[in-house]
Amino acid sequence: MSTLESLMGHIAAVWVCDPERYPALAGMDDAQRRMFLVKHSLLHVSKTVGKVAAVCEDFDHAGVKGAESAAALQDGVVKLFVNALKLAEETGLSAEDLLRRAPEFVK
Image 1 (cartoon, rainbow, N blue to C red):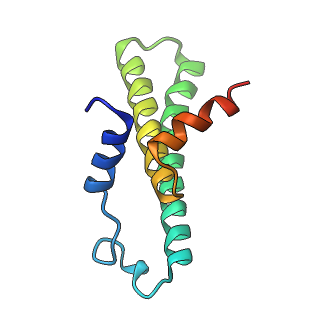
Image 2 (image 1 turned 90 degrees about the horizontal axis):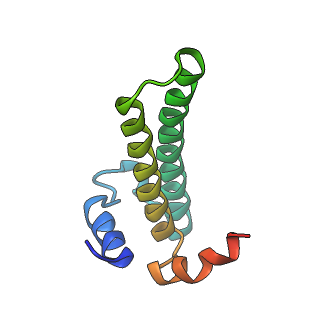
Image 3 (image 1 turned 135 degrees about the vertical axis):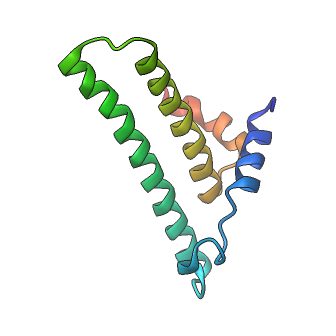
């Protein structure tokens, strides 16, 4: 995949959110559905942050762990990025929106 837009499309195609996969969505209106999906994505973000925090906490007690810890940290960063893109989709942000608006938050 060569663009942010194509990656977001791939994520949306693989992580389909429908009542078959998420029975709680049945009968929800659009606003309820959006909030359910945002919450669900935030739970995934929280899980990933916890995994990264565990690597850091282990470092505090035992020091440098080497390549395994570096790989776990990198995996966590990639998972956070992917989850952020899913969250962007769920809140109506396109790849173009993200690229246009991101510099506003880098100060």
